[in-house]
Amino acid sequence: MLGLAAAVIVVATLVYTQYLVQRIAREEQEKIALWAQAIQNRAQLVNKTDSIFKIFEAEDRKNISLWAEANKFIAEYEGDGDIYFPTKILSSNTTIPVIIANEKNEILFYNNFPKDKDQDTLWLKEQLFLFKQKNPPIDVSYRVLGKTIRQYLYYDDSYIYRELKNTIQNLVESFISETVINSASVPVIITNENQDSVISYGNIEEIGFSEGFDHSTLIAAMKGYNSLEVELVKGKKNFIFYRDSYVLNLLKYFPFIFLAIIGAFLLIAYLLFSTARRSEQNQVWVGMSKETAHQLGTPLTSLIGWVEVLKSRNIDPEAINEIEKDIQRLQTVTERFSKIGSTPELKEEDLNEVLISFIDYMKKRTNSKIVYEYHYSLPPDETIPLNRPLFEWVMENLIRNAIDAIHPPGKITIEVTDTGKYVAIDVSDTGKGIAKNQFKTIFRPGYTTKKRGWGLGLSLTKRIIENYHKGKIFVKQSEPSVGTTFRILLRY
Image (cartoon, rainbow, N blue to C red; front, side, top):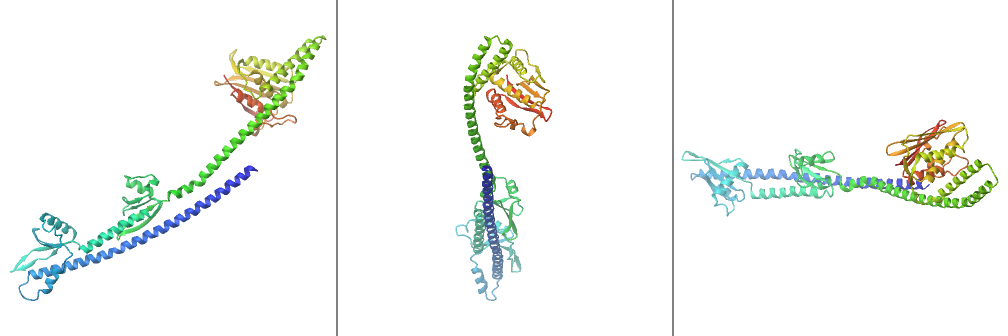
């Protein structure tokens, strides 16, 4: 019931968390879409300025051409006609820097330059070179006395046009900057038309990049997610690549992190509960064991007295001897129960001698149709650390379970081998066997297939071998109607 309640709580929490994640993701996607539309609109606004550039360029060319014609007219003037308008045109140019040079690139005339520079010959020659690179020259050659004087007019953009270009350039740079800033926590880059160079970027630290990054590597890391195509300058494409924000990525993994936390919490709770339950079981076993030892003490004392009475009445000595062995066994059992709850002392014991003595005792108290076989392959006098009373208890539990499983006739085999790190003791019988799904269940407290019994024998056996002797015990093999083999592994 508790497990079902925990499962319902976990599922409900995960479903609600997933709902929140999807909702936040959807809202962020909507914001990104709105931001992308704003970028597109801003780019279109920037592109419209290109037509203004064209108008200014055409006007500058038209004005300077008119100015050149006026200059040529005056140069060829021979005294006929009105020169007011040509002169007016020449004087009206106050914004377009001009230079007139001959075929030898000697500067003959210049105008509209800063006053602090117009006397610098070297600077003026540099301007002439730049003007040649920028705009095609206008031929202002004229004839005087039948001779042609070759001259060329060179010019730059007007001051108004340059101011406008600077303003537009600042607008473009502002657009690029705002594109990155307005992306909030979204990793974003703006590339050139060939997608081989990053013009601007933002929040790339979230995907593992820093200043000095390789452009091609960063572009490759951003491609394949979200992209936009814009024209910051008409005729030149730019590409914007962006990815989900760091917060959104965290939210995507949050359900799994939450589930791991819940799982860890449940595991810790289970371990604490199991520890508390085992501790409680141990206390019950210790109390029950000590009380059992106390209860056995009185009849044992009485039995010892009755044996002495039997000896004085000439009873068969062999019968008395067997009774004394049983009394010793009861004393051993009492000692076992009295040691439950305390750390037993391990001593070096001759395992072969312990097992032979134990088998001899059990043979006389077992149905004669059950045969015992014993195989020992360790070196003679080999010793291992044992608590003999507790180890004999383990063997007695295994043998009695084997006897209960056998329908006579049958056979019980005890085989001791060396596995290198451990001494292996195999206890086999020809009984009814154990189903595979019960191999581990049979060691749990309270589990039993007998009509009478508490199901503590194998549980105590496992505790004695694993907790006290630091060994292992398990079902090595079993087959229904064929038999079972238990294996005990003890350290040297």
